[in-house]
Image 1 (cartoon, rainbow, N blue to C red):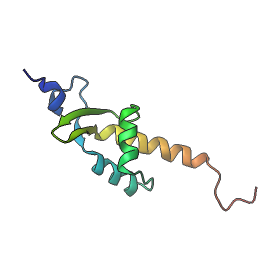
Image 2: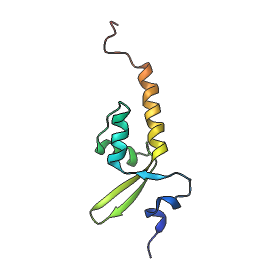
Image 3: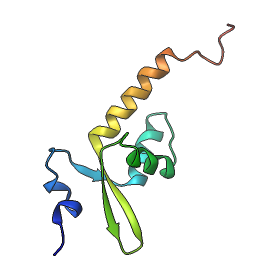
Image 4: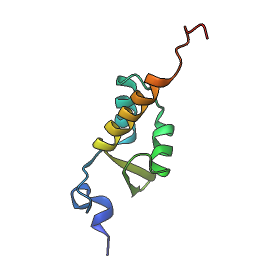
Length: 91
């Protein structure tokens, strides 16, 4: 018997929509000006920096990622960037 909750994004109980794969999430970060490699996105999933559902495949594990969590993480990075010193500062 298989557990459909692990493989079907629409059945995840918290209401999140797990529609992005690692490559799509990586492109979202790059498009927002915060490039992240697919491997970094996988680590974000493993460390719960992004809401994601691991799905076993014949070739290994993939992650389905909640789009809203990607947008939230990008906003956090934008917020931090506003306080980071610019490389052109003379301080």
